[in-house]
Length: 423
Ligand code: ADP
Ligand code: MG
Image 1: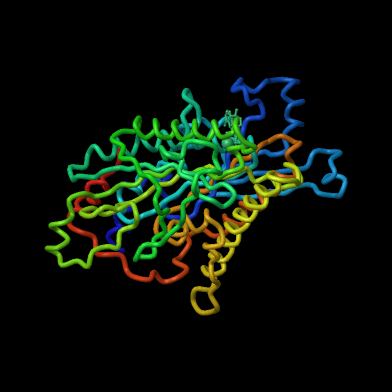
Image 2: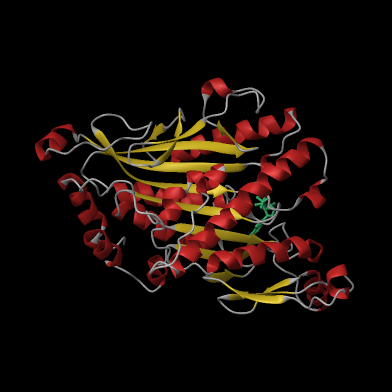
């Protein structure tokens, strides 16, 4: 609405311009030397450069070319240049990447009730997705930084707002809770969870545990616990965590709404599964470390690996088809046949339907390996991501089934506070 809109513009800085787009696509090139050592200089650097098949050509564009002598080169492929919201070269520090990608989502979470925003890291295995989302202890990624910023932001709220975290994964199109105490044991033997929709049509994972967290440290402890669970499963089974999509969410709830709701004569919001009475979901931010996007030829075509590849490819293809349909609908919104967006055809797109749909923002981090031997897969990654970039601001593709309940005075107060410039 108008209020939320004017709030979103308050305190806008230079990079805040980027906030006005619903879907933003950022590319981050991984250093070719993965030890963290500084890139070599001089003659050796030239040698190394030949190993690289991608180059940032400006703040917004990237060029990719096949290595000489490769199959692609022999068949006449001389490469491509693509444009994105921003392209970050291999030396980009974690902090800078966070400021451009996830920091606007944090501001959005604190300002706009009912928003559901997500950052998804997409790319082949070893391209830097986990480094970008989680990072290391010394070089924390966007998720730990976002958590710190959220709790800092909440300190200025006097209203009772509670934060809860969830951590789960989608493996072979099944959802598993990574925080479930009972769920210890080989992955795949745990009971998968189901997706449901509440009375407002908002998607939620039924039975997913949400743990109350009072600080960034508490939330990060949950992240580490869940990650350990994934690693344990990795050693025991023919399962690799890079073959699943992992999702960490932080959700803010406004407490103590009982009296107010009845005063206002509200019809009460149909709360999603995790919601408890006397509270209302304010907003949610999700960080998704997508499964490696490499196609089946590379990972082998048999057994478990093939099943995984099929599941991953179909979910990433569905995401692509959703983006395509959204783009079509955006171009044809004034008359013309709107397309059905196939959100329900994969778990990831269904999960983030609300965010993709227009209630929030979506940030895609395209993580790119510069290594020449990854050329074919990396070319595919960029081509796919370029499609997403053409969408720009996504308009709501379908009418919401019901309008969102009017914002309560308590929330309006939270919003007013949160709308103050962050520093
Ligand atoms: P993915 O999750 O996409 O499979 P990782 O995040 O595990 O890939 O990255 C592969 C390796 O490269 C890791 O050792 C990681 O620490 C390192 N790495 C990735 N991106 C960067 C970066 N921007 N700077 C330094 N090291 C990186
Ligand atoms: Mg990873």
